[in-house]
Image (cartoon, rainbow, N blue to C red):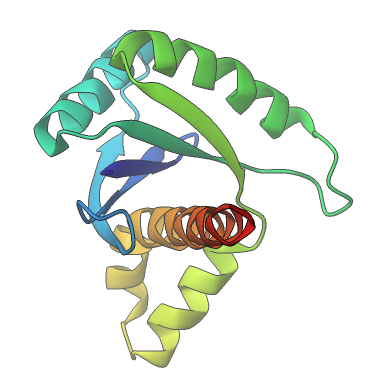
Length: 147
């Protein structure tokens, strides 16, 4: 099952893509926010169609205590609009610390600051999507062993 991961932001949307087996996430693209949310959602739809994705996983920026802050509420609402626009299932996944993890990974790889700023959103989307894929695989394995 191919999945698209989205790291929503106010300026950019990071996009990651899983392999067709649904086991490995890779950075895919970045959508620059246009100021027109419908246009942004059409751009996401085009990426979902191009990737032939069956599901979209959207990072949910929960507060450290796990509650919804203002951004989580905003992105929950936007995820409903995205699901309507793209025509495939949308799920939300906790994205706490994904940008920090992505930043640290890029720094360990000696990616310079200017280049990091260009790719951080899609790398954060990749970290988030990989977390969802790993959890899904664990859950699938657990269900299979219970049968």
